[in-house]
Length: 305
Image (cartoon, rainbow, N blue to C red; front, side):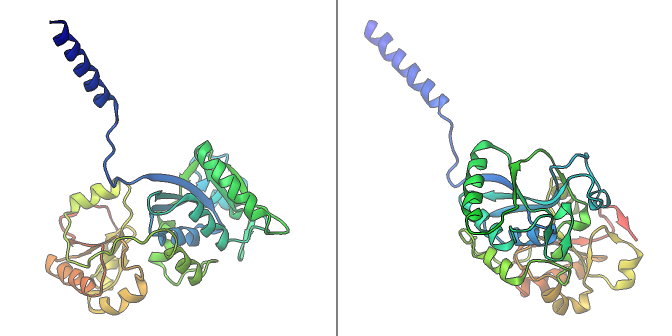
C-alpha cells in the first residue's frame, strides 16, 4: 500500500510539472514593436513596409504633449510630437539590430529638426522603445552610430505616447506612388534585403465577403481598396480611401499605381462579374495578396462622394 501511494504521489507531481510548463507553438510569430522618427513619415513607413519581417508599419505622432493631435496641430510645432512610424516585426525574420541599421542608413543623424526638405520640430529624428531590454539595444546601436559622425542629434528615449495619424497618411506612397518622399528607391531596395526573405506568395484568385473584409479592417488591417468602376461612377460615390483604377485601363494603371505586388488589396466594382474580371486581371499581373470584394450594392461601408 505504501509503495502504491508513493507511485501515485510521483505521478501527481509529474502531472503538475506538465501543467506548469507553457507550451510554445512551433514556428509561431514573435512580434515585437519599435518606433522610428525619420523625418516625413510617408517615406519611413513605406521603407519599413518593404522589410520581409515587418508585419505592420503605421504612421503617427509620438511623445508629444497633446492627446490625439491632428496633423494641423502637429504642424505648428507646439505639441512636441514627432512624425513617427510604429513598426511591428517578427523577430524570427528580422532583428532589432537590423532594423536600426536600416534606419540609420536612411537618415542624416547630424541635423536637428530636419530631414531632406522638411524643417520643423515634427521632423526631428528619434528612436523610441517600449521596454528596457529594447532600450539597451537601441542605446548601444546609437552609441556606435554616433562615433561615425561629427555631430549626432537623434533622440533616443522610451515611448511615452503614440497616436495614429489620419487615414490619408497611411500607405501614402502606395496610394500616391509619385508623391513627395525624402527617401529614395535605393532606401526601399535596401529594406527589401534586410532580414530573412518572406516565403514566396502565389498569385491566385481569392474572394472575401464584405462583412469579413469590414471586420478585418475594423480589427486593424489596412488594405489598399481598388475601385474598378468608371470615373463618373466613382465620383458619384465610393468607399472612403479607395483608389480608382477603371477596368478598361486596369492592366496599365496597376503596374504604376500599385508597384508592390504583395500588398493587401481589396478590389470592387458595382457588379460582381466586373469585380471578378478586374481581380482576375490583377492575378494575371502577379498580385499575390488580392481579394475580390464583389458588387458595391450590398456592402456595409460608408460611401463618400
